[in-house]
Length: 185
Image 1 (cartoon, rainbow, N blue to C red):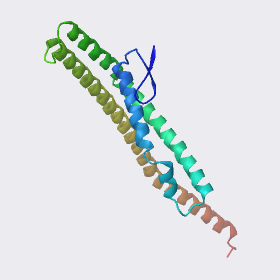
Image 2 (cartoon, rainbow, N blue to C red; image 1 turned 30 degrees about the vertical axis):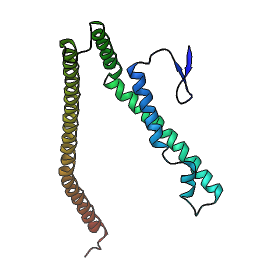
Image 3 (cartoon, helix red, strand yellow; image 1 turned 180 degrees about the horizontal axis):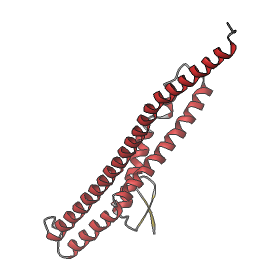
């Protein structure tokens, strides 16, 4: 059964999950922030432009705002997936329902505290693992840079020898040319 919400939008009898509510709130907030400037305010900000130029600029602005909102929501989704926000909120909802069924919600209850503690530990362990992997990657990168530097040093140290050899060859050829082209005395 569909009903009308206070803003004229259709709402459903089905209760939205906490994640869906979070998603909707984030989408609404990002949209509201990005469109904080009305079309009239935007147009009035460029009095030196013609009406046609203002319209083109406003079109570009609205396309950019739409792309920004799309990017914000994509990044938000990726962060939610990385932090398993949906799963955490579902677990919280389940714990709250269990507490309500058991005769009242007590935030000091052991199951709730244990669940929060477990989630916190899990998040900390995941973060430590991510940091450990980053450190390993940086160490590998540093080792590669050291190898490249050593190779460059070796090339640089070989070049003076190569230049000395080349100079000796040029001097030898020059001497041979002088001997073959000098008139006999």
